[in-house]
Image 1 (cartoon, helix red, strand yellow):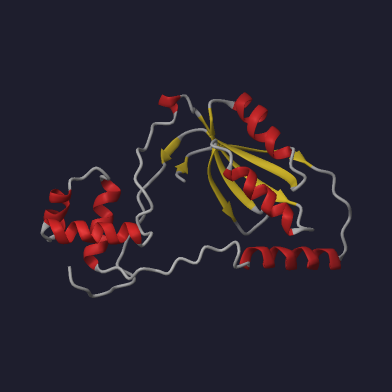
Image 2 (cartoon, rainbow, N blue to C red; image 1 turned 90 degrees about the vertical axis):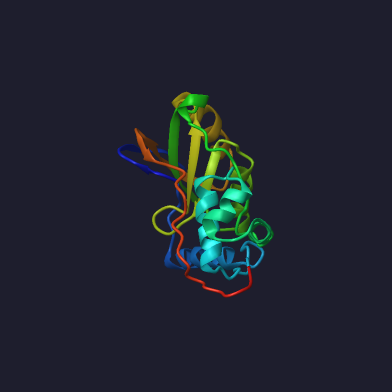
Length: 209
């Protein structure tokens, strides 16, 4: 997700809410805490120890995923075969999840980026599950995060225009009983998006090339 210069903020829809007592609030908090920390929902990736050579490889492939192995090997100070093995280990270990082209959104007709804060009903774990399942099936949703604060989820949506956002994404989300309300911020101009991750050798390991 990138940084943006200006945005317009509006609450689009809010479902009627019944009054709640302290016990209701505690029950909601307990359900949400259980859902967040559920082993079924958390991906437990064993962190692969990274040494400075690994970090350098990752920096290079982030900057240019099409870099030739022989060029990469020269930049990290390895011969081609050990360099290729390292890249393969980083892929198999889940550190490198994949390779893709970064497209210019307006150039492919996706001129509107929306950040939508979503609150869901918390009286059942199924509500959060239903929301996550729904957004994972929407190609227009390019990012989804469970967050702290006034909303439960923050999603990033790319669409051609406002009409498409209202007629597709909002319509699909509001059809879910899980949704309490949706608050949308519309990006006016993008200064940085899809940036490379800031890497440093936090977990230093020593191993043979």
